[in-house]
Length: 191
Image 1 (cartoon, rainbow, N blue to C red):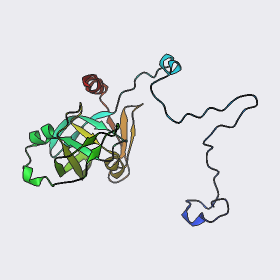
Image 2: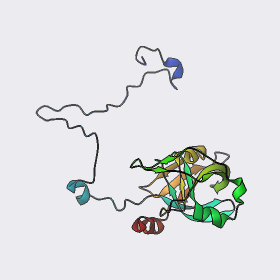
Image 3: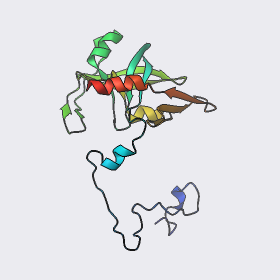
Image 4: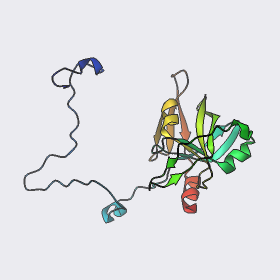
């Protein structure tokens, strides 16, 4: 449809850009291998290991309290706060709203939340009111910040570089939020 020009109004440029090939071309005499799922790491990966495989863990100012051990999780569609952390914020429980939407984990486990709450989150010279799902789970992290917050903050996280790059509210400055690898290692050693 793009090549025929039917979607030209939706393209940033009117020129057609050929999409990247999803599968490699077959080279004469070789078989192309397609992998649909990966379980574990191959021996080759272990030999050429990156210097780290740490999750991106930062500290954030939430409801005027600095909270450590905050996981930046692009795989999460929700911001999650534990009951223990919520109690330490000393916010009245009357501000919790009921919810009937369960959280589904990676292995399809179901967690029924205690409710939802809106809290202010400040980072990179910007404060946003974010919705958090209150849970009674006890993960290694105090908060989990999902992709919605990352997108609203106009952030680009990198676990390889252990940094989140953000635009300042006026869009003129790039602000870096650096990850804490020591804390990240402590968090996943607890699991």
